[in-house]
Image (cartoon, rainbow, N blue to C red):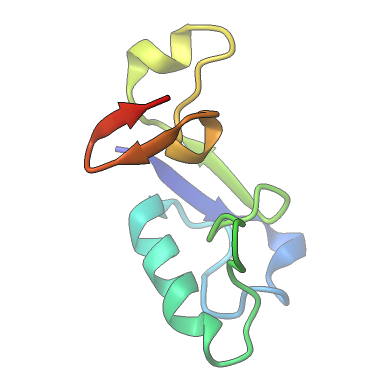
Length: 88
């Protein structure tokens, strides 16, 4: 499971998350998206729900973390994804 934690120096930017506590990244991403409509910093179009300058990440699929340059997020891939199938 991929986990994330809010960096203490970014706590003011993301008041909906507790700093220095590891939680499932999916849980934090859901909170970020729910709070986006309330004027709180979260994802915009084409941006990630959890900005890398505000959050630390750990975990995920081990076979991908061992490969240098592994692309672990759908948005890291240059091709369009639709319904689980990749199209060029």
